[in-house]
Length: 231
Ligand code: CA
Image 1 (cartoon, rainbow, N blue to C red):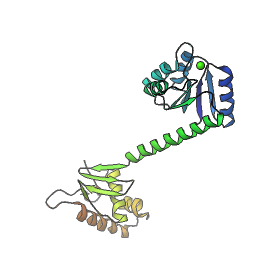
Image 2 (cartoon, rainbow, N blue to C red; image 1 turned 60 degrees about the horizontal axis):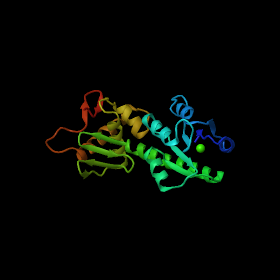
Image 3 (cartoon, protein in one colour; image 1 turned 120 degrees about the horizontal axis):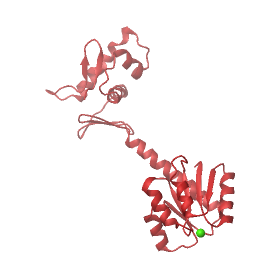
Image 4 (cartoon, helix red, strand yellow; image 1 turned 45 degrees about the vertical axis):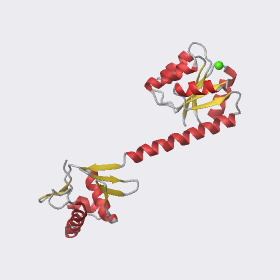
């Protein structure tokens, strides 16, 4: 968390929270009503990491601010409220709040909540990154996070080098990779002409494991050039 927007009409509380966050090295801005707070919240140039949002605010209440922020942004929102009824919690979450803190609160509790929210967001974004590390080619799938290669439902056992060669080819679909480039990227050798036949050997191993008899190979040979997985 580097930039936190505070929308709170109790000026003493707002200033106190701001001071404590600044002390933690966090950049802050404070707004004392819902409307100016909303404008700051949806300002794309501000890049907030979190919005601390009071529930009872002049001009626009916190629920309405949260609802409108959610129309354009996924920024985490922590609601602050003097009330602690189940109804408030539910409606706060319905309107897009990510967490909830009841006033009066100790600043340590707020900081702990912010850290917890930060961790949760980081875990979520890591999960999303993992999702993006799946490679597809025809009915081949590589799940990079657990190094599993499947053809349809069938899991294909590959050695470390075969796996890395396949990932290199699948990550560069439609690009012809020369033996020298593959040797360099997969084996880490500088392309020495004499050693490039190692690539041909491993392509053959891969084809033996991946290909289905009578069907076109997953890896195409481009004569005099190298290899490619062409879509
Ligand atoms: Ca208030």
